[in-house]
Length: 571
Image 1 (cartoon, rainbow, N blue to C red):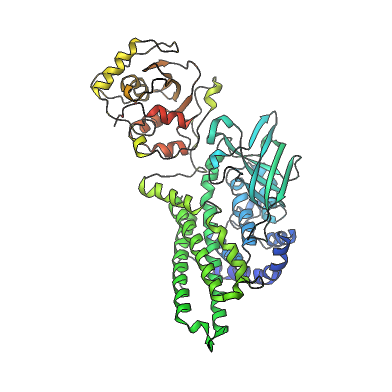
Image 2 (image 1 turned 60 degrees about the vertical axis):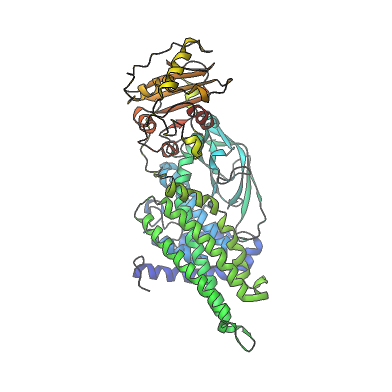
């Protein structure tokens, strides 16, 4: 078929992968499904054939081929009729080593990436926990630095390749007090003392081992950190695009192969004296599904093309994951229906394909999560940038304060009523004279924390335009009628740049006071450059994106949401 995505070389490569799958993989399907894991020999074989480094640099044994070679490989792997085999290989090549290849040190790449590409080392990616699946920011596994090592404690669940891997890239909190800005990635050797795993029983994906991992005071060398400390959350969010594309490619290919098998069956199976493929109800049912599969495939190819062109296509990749997993689940159900009672028998591959398809709407981000990501971009105008390629942020100017190391928890979109009154969420009203007057009158009482009160250098009719002026204006923008009688807080602002500075904003006894420097124990710490803070407050920069990218750091987003609702907007 004429296509803008594949050329003659791609076609030759597809044939080589298909030959490998048909001769060396599919014949072992029942055996590997029964063993609930893959033999190490097949990993080594794929490494020898160059299948495990398609996306990665030649320096480490890869091919650095265009992304459509990975598309082809993933499609052909899906034809094995083993969703577990496809999952294990996909996690190994496109997820476990993705972070290492993108931001790992040269030493880590030489030690782990090279072995992963050759098939000598099997990789796993350990993110999900018993209490944190899609909610990555709330993981509890910790890695506290002690000298030249991190001491890793915690557990992970639903980890593909987790039991038989040679290494796992583990998401953990190296600074637990910093929320999502304290999450880092560590490469942990499977044979490390204190690293244990249990194999989990699944209703599908039987040919892959899926484990629950436990870390009990595991010592991990400091040099095993991947990228920058505290950037793990953003690396994970970035890598989801590749993960979701791979999942989408495999889902469509599995659905297509399921249709192929079903079409063959309806020509052979007879009922009422003729092939069941002659019955209109069967024909139309398959036509409807085939149309949806084709539409899903074309969207997937387009998203793959964007990815190959280095576009950070979050919306398109999320749409691919949503649509393909739902369509594949539907296709598997329809195809099994065409087999009748035989489709429910283990000896028929369609039964395995049916149960393997079900998990597609869960792994890599549920369909519900995909819908919310897409909705944020479509409806709330949220935009995302690549963490791998984002410029490094300036260091905080408050290096002498251990409290300022606290950073942000996951930011969720506020409700509309909350948005109306939230300055840090880029929502600040024009001052109302009456409430400004009440706020000034409140300054006659002393704050519970003694601080030097600064007189905001703002003319009555002049709106603040710099970070310093905006923070000082908080005294006049307080809305006393929104204060609960017993509400007290202390917020530290650490704003770098010529128009910034260090400030303490104290609210207590119905008044707001702003002082230079940091005084008292903060309930929340706000860290940013003067430019970012000003742009957020004046509505020139999306606050959610600023927090997600680490440009605006909040040590306690819940406290900041409460604090922010107490002030008038500036726009």
